[in-house]
Image (cartoon, rainbow, N blue to C red; front, side, top):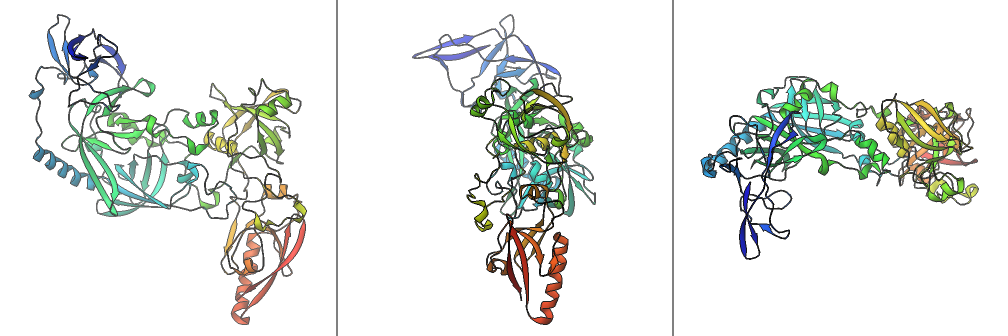
Length: 606
């Protein structure tokens, strides 16, 4: 290959031998490719910029002359890599750039108008409304925690029907968002339909929506075999919501270069920066490919290996690429074989349920590793969780873990490498000093901004959720004598905790209450026979607030009736409300308890 270069005030012809090399294509087969670059005679020389060719990295690509072994010209290279195995002839063969069809502006506008009209009908608009986590959540991270915790009120997505009852959506949805989906409304053509979440793919950033009524027109007749063509003009179709309605943005584009990407796949790169969810078509609207995020194998487990907070990890920029319709065909025809079993919709009473081992812990540190003389197994304090509490009847209790054990790693049966256990900024060891309670005996819960029991959402419960319920894990740890041990346990869903406990909100009193859960009972040292409910939240200015009821107090009795659970509380309040209709007002005496001290509050219903 030859190209023209410049060195200060003189020009030169630079050339090099460019043997064909084989690389994996997007279809999985190996293809021969040729590098069109040529070396310059000096390290500080630069090629003359050509106005037609500039790469996404901002470096200029010059036009190269490609010669055969006899030094006879074969064609013109306008991109860094060209394919040799194209049929009938590679696009680079031939010596005239003007021999290709020239697209006039009027013709381009006509094509784009036609494509916009066509894909307005083909692309379905999907409105997903999410259940919102109330302010009574026990998590201290509810308002500023990981990105995965942040759930919008609603969000619009755009997808293409792949079956009469299934829509492929080329967008990523988080685990926390999927589980709290409330409703799914679909506008497809002139139809208004209802949908349900059918699952998210395990290795690409996309999900599927099932349409209850069916009746969709699949777009499979538009799918083209092969990959995004090199150099040949294509059109980029990007659906979006604009000015309160669906808008189909159509732009001219083409692939000018390729990358040697994830798992040795040769990836075509659009000339212009495109958003995830962009479809690429020919001038007639047939689909070549779509731009998606690649979900690398084990990406979430790698996040935990690095000790990152869940919200700080994103693969969108680094791993997004163009997927051909050929690559995606099996994802369309057999979606169930490619879905992530841990990204699922959950009913409201289960959305906050967590996977658990059944422990509280402190993060290992260099100082602790030296104090315990475990520098080597803890890698100088870089890994390890120091157990501070084991809940009865938990998986940890069943395998004999005790306070003082140091957890080092977990490993799945079919995995070669374990996941080392590292705490992060989300994890705080539990004690009253950390909460600023000071003298517990004289402290009031009224000023607490979070519960006096530990948050059950932490890096360990997040990891177990990612690995999935039912998985058998080998836990490697040091026992209380710092002897290395390995025990097997199976990932289980925890009993209801304060976040996921049954609750009831009563507007007349301004109270939200929840059942007592295992960690509340343990931390407050309540016997199994002790009954009551927990004040989870109080409305400002409500009768309960006026009576100085405080968050996280226990309600033991209302008047002379015991309150064993939320259901009993609801019945008592309903009877009192019926009395208000005949008596005008009713005053209820609440027997409250906080940290072993009992007092009364009179709350008036009117």
